[in-house]
Length: 384
Image 1 (tube, rainbow, N blue to C red):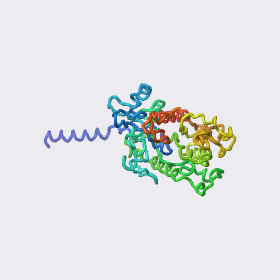
Image 2 (cartoon, one colour):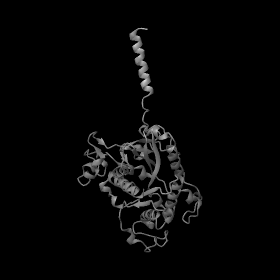
Image 3 (cartoon, rainbow, N blue to C red):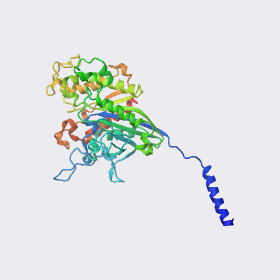
């Protein structure tokens, strides 16, 4: 064996030997705080991001882009724009999964992990996780993410995953009907469907269970490998469809309390933080002053009320039910850790919004949705 060949083999052996004694690769470990957000079309998210006026080419009033330039809101919304990338801010420590992607709505459960943009929408939080995963839409999740980032120490060892399950036109009374409501008498629910657990309640639980199964999250989010996921909170933003029916409105408080109890039981988290931004349609309208007979909702006459411009006081009474259904004094069996957050001050009139025809979607106003998301985050932190 020549000296050259001998020393070559020796070098290879030393390399192998050194490799075998090298310190083992560090396994990334950390906490993954999981928050489930659910509801109907306003949780899907209808707020518009970049829509411009077809005549002037300027951003439409009430879009996210408009808020960046409006002197009234520019400072507050500056955080949503990344000057370095010249694009909307991405929050890398906050991941999001949403059941919709284009026409795929996951109405019978989603393919998980699936293909992003095909089976669901998922990635680091930024714009584009509103309805259908459209790049031009946001829901409350965007403001929620900024709110949580501002109040929690997120870093290489602590991150957030938002699981958003939402479908348009759904009720708490039937579509999200929780098991307790299906099993127990409800004086305001009188159809055979009242004894059935809601389809979308079951789909929500199924999607969450599939995502939380061992090894699934890193397949969708490789940078979360080694993180231990734990469900820390539930955000509920819903109320339009129940407010279209007097009986569904009257049942709302009862169903909301049962929803909270059943989710805590399902996820084995008795003190699960729950944040409910109230539905807030029409803002502060002073409808209470027009209620006839006076005090009827408060004394238990939930079907006999009338307000001047709100038949049956339905919109107002959904809000009151959301406050009541999270109130630990009225419902001590909830053991606290649930809160309803005021949102009626975030209502913006149609002339200041991108879509004047859809009041049931807050006229697609991005300021409204962003502030609702931040309010939900503030409530979540307070309940954790």
